[in-house]
Length: 340
Ligand SMILES: Nc1nc2c(ncn2[C@@H]2O[C@H](COP(=O)(O)OP(=O)(O)OP(=O)(O)O)[C@@H](O)[C@H]2O)c(=O)[nH]1
Image 1: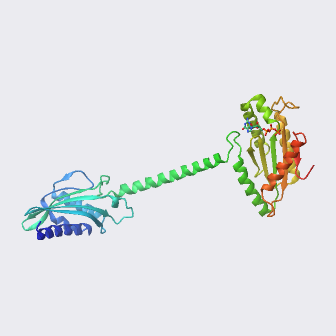
Image 2: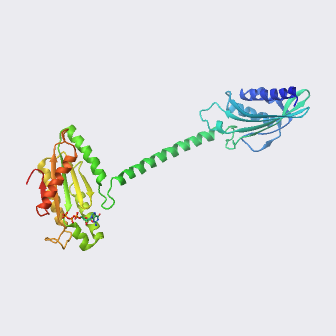
Image 3: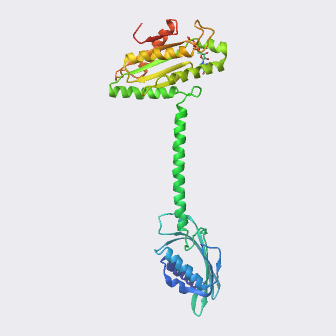
């Protein structure tokens, strides 16, 4: 193409883009009498110059501030002495906070025709997925805002769902799946928490460890599923046994249970251990291989004042040692730390 023709086409295009970007109404006088065009917001061919002028004014009225055209590619064609074509690809950056439209690539085809010494725009076809524009809009700004509101409420709902799922997961990960009471993980966590609280508030912490006696024989005699039921019954009895604030009942593992009792005096701990022992006797789960004919349990009780000198595991060690002494003493009884 001859350089002067190239320059001419380029300047026609640049002038168009400058007028369009600066929302210059003089652009409407550049449309040919035989104009035809496609607006981005509609898929209807407009072949009426007046209608196109109206659309252009509507465009300028919707977004009166200068817009920024980021050019991506440009093709110039010299079709005849009086006919040239420009095809351009670009992003349109509107002066609105939502960058969604900016990401779309617009394709514009402009045909200029020389009419009585003036280059007029004979055709303008813009292709952008702007079909979402509401009535009275060229750019689908209202739709975008609606979408934003929808998106925000979806995000809010999802965040709530996620928080609930996390809460459920937290509960699940702290629950023993067989007995539905707290599991070892929860106990370990609460032990540390209550130990620290006891240190801060100078209050005591007690632990009762309970272990079913001769449970292996129970399983051997009645079967493993009956053993499971026995564990469930015991767990349910323990968790219903007069809960004090902050008290935790958990399955420590196998046929062993723990009751953590914060901020409690020694006598109340002993009474609680006795009470629990009696409750278990009262539900009287049959166990043919024992002297009493029912499931017996042994318990070890520990009682400490949390301090910097010891760590929380000392409470477990002491309760475990007391439990061992209860077993050695013939089972089905309670032993307390530092007592015979
Ligand atoms: N059914 C069932 N049995 C379990 C479960 N967890 C552990 N056990 C059983 O508990 C029994 C514990 O046996 P031992 O440690 O010998 O204790 P024990 O027979 O109660 O003996 P003592 O504690 O000394 O009186 C084993 O037979 C385990 O299989 C469980 O979830 N379900």
